[in-house]
Amino acid sequence: MAKADRSATMNHLHSAARLSRTALAARLLEHGFYAGQDQIMLALNLEDGQTPGQLATRLGVRPPTITKTINRLQVQGFLEKRASESDARQAHVFLTQNGRDTIRAIEKSVRKTEKQAFRGFDKKEQKLLGKLLQRVEANLSGTALVVHDEAEETEESAGA
Image (cartoon, rainbow, N blue to C red; front, side):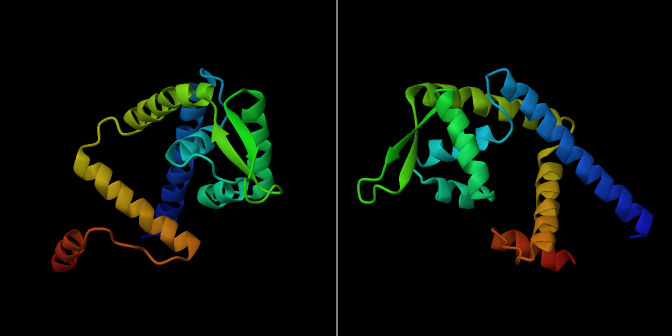
């Protein structure tokens, strides 16, 4: 691929990422959430009672960022912190009932944004884009690409 084509592709990638975050942020703001708060809420919905450190690791952000966001969500009434039963120095974060009640709104906002982003794509195109972006992520993070479906890997290798 020519250098100009690579640059244009990277510009499209940056623009699509920015626009998708902006679209989701606008939807979440309607429910009182700011960018990034949804990820903590969804992570706790999957596994309530995580420590701030566990959340930071899971979401790939620095602990101070998580702490600030948890504090804001706590003030908003969506989360509560409780001291660990085994180590009083450690806190665990839990969704409040109000937090649980808003999970559906967050998930709906995510689905609407996905629907908007993939309008006009068929399932095969969505799957291909997902695979290509996984490769970009693996390249940029320096990690090995994990193929989840061996049958697909075999078919792709045979076609190459």
